[in-house]
Length: 362
Length: 188
Image (cartoon, rainbow over all chains, first blue to last red; front, side, top):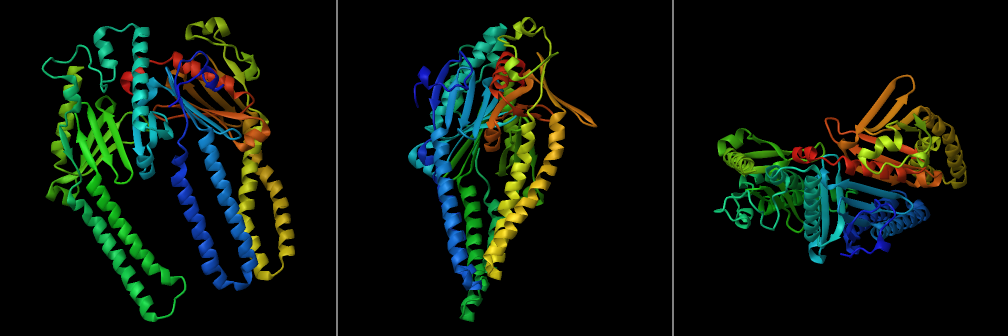
């Protein structure tokens, strides 16, 4: 990430603001969009030439024209994506976080640290391979996503440090007493906090402690398995029927195999969620990690939690599993969900106890 | 009350200095009427893009591309009148819209037949969005969204601004000046 020089500062920064970091977007962060656009255009062209011309053979000259238009649209999309990468700027200052892109179509979003409630990091498969990801600063009003950031975890820590320094300045400006200062400072920092923590609990050890770790129960796979079997079964029957018929049945030739593929993908998605999702309760908050190729980690501290609710259906009550919904502050912040968790009431009590201990310590 | 464009917006360096700078007098301005063209631009373009495949298909089926090209051109020309009728309502609204800025916050006041006023206090502002769309760039205007939190999660959309940077900078300054521990501890 670049060390900011004065001549690098864009004109839209606030005057006399201390710039800590200026960075741009990783060029390969648009790979997902490039692939999806290319696949979509390719499918359209394939349908046009494979199906459209079968119905209207005399329309071949127009098919060429439409293909050229689609290719031009694809090229324009690629140019637009590249331009987005070239013009993207993410800036971390002592007071704010900025996100900007574009020249002709300009976009700028900024917020101050006192409004940031959560920081989310997620990385796609390509991001994990090439070391980039998305860092989103959630506020109560809107999220400020930084896409394609190099070393997203380092960026997240950078923002956390800047936020802490901002809060300390705020505390000095308002001249708070020591106990109130400690209450306001964020807890999740790597450096040891001074005072306010009992001597027998080393802060570093407490921060790393995991009170509870679990994933969804196997029974959560049942609905996806049943629907995959139903759709897949119909797909198999249709495919076998099409093979048995001997000659192609037009577009219906593809329906059976498509249903089969859909069924496999449905089950695969449910299995990946079951196998790679983990819910953790820690002394300072909760963590949800999910995803196989593309990993996502969401951490929420208890000071942002407003309430915790559990839900168990009929079968959930019989087998003692259910969902926990952890609501956080802010109209735009989505709740944290622990889905398909065993003994949800017990886990909810654990969360409530951890929150109470945190409040007492503060 | 001071009136004018944002070029006339008085500097407001610190929350405490506002009274001296402005005499705590609200500042009022209005959006550019060009902002009303945003809707017909988009409506016209969208209908043209959606209608084109039908005319192409008709030309293919009938084997008379020249005729359908003429019909498409006529169709587009006929759109212009309804497009500007569609713009009429937003244009009327823009004529009667006022943006008022004072030490406490920013207000968008609209009075056509009914009166409506949306207000965001500076300490409720969570983010500021400054945008220039393609149509805005052509027309030479800009827009600023003031995003707030609260029970309604208000977003004030200020369009048709000639110099949005000054409003943006003022809102940013006010936002920083009103950064509060109350909001921090409430996790707002």
